[in-house]
Length: 260
Ligand SMILES: [Fe+2]
Image: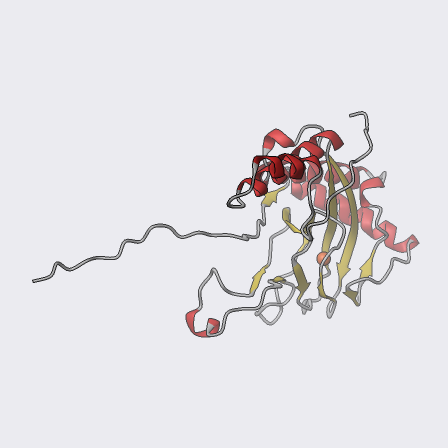
């Protein structure tokens, strides 16, 4: 009689994950009350612009350069959170001299206002800070931000309902919350159906690092990828390390020496 063999579960790999760090800003109730007044004053003088917003007011992209006290205080706190978020997802040893370069703007969505699906090219992080979030007048998704996975969902996803494989993820953060996400992650905002305005700050953050440390990180990555090619000679490895290749296999030019 043959012995019954049992399969062994070894590991659930979760790859290509999407980090969405969430923060509560210290003393947000006071800051929000003050910044609502500052935004009211700005709207009397500034026309604003149209980007992903439909209906409502989108300020210029100068949030991090504004002089109003609550704007400045909030900008500093948001930058602290973005630095923390970067440390949580990256190799801390390679973050020396990390600098964040941020743009930000105010979004005011009145009743009927929403943001069409979009992403934020050119940045590392994007983020949304919530100042005023009305309760939906008719329930449902009104005023919620919804993230859209750019990868297509596997067939049958509707039947399986796996949290790992769904293509949409919505949230309605409360006032004082900062939601950080990769700038490549598409998102949109459902129409506000309440009489009260929905007021948020949107943020883009570029991450700049010491150029020499960046070059060393590229060399380390090139060494690692070369080591994973079976049968590659030592000589080829040494040559490959001289200039790291990009994803298309092209060799990078040596970067100019820049004083750190
Ligand atoms: Fe956005």
